[in-house]
Each structure stands twice: as structure tokens, then as C-alpha cells.
Length: 70
Image (cartoon, rainbow, N blue to C red):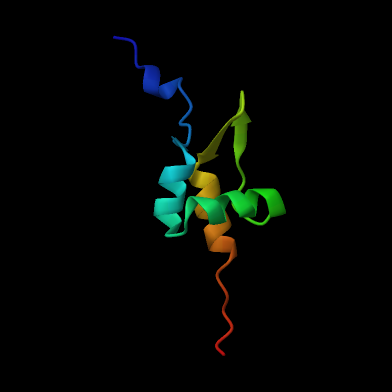
């Protein structure tokens, strides 16, 4: 019996813009503007197609957390 799970690295799932905008509860236009302004979560371009790693989106989101209480 060959256990491939021990040899295969786990890779974060890739999400499209629609899925990420729904996850973040922002419009796709906002997500697009963030890409242009280099403000949003890291993304990949694959032949003109934009994809996001779920881990990157979650890390970016966590980086926005503030301990300040206004």
C-alpha cells in the first residue's frame, strides 16, 4: 500500500475573484480596485486569470486586525 499523503504537500485551495469577494463581503469591483492599488490580499495571475490562495487571503485578513479600541 502506497501512502501518497505523506509524500504530497498540502496546497492551499485557489479561489476566484467571485469567491473571495463573497468571503470578504465586498464587491468584485472593490476587490479589483484593491488589486490595482496593491491594497488587497496577494493574488496569482495564471494566463490572465486571477486566483487567490485561501491561506494568503486569511493571512492578509488577520494582518488587518487591530488591537486599538477607539
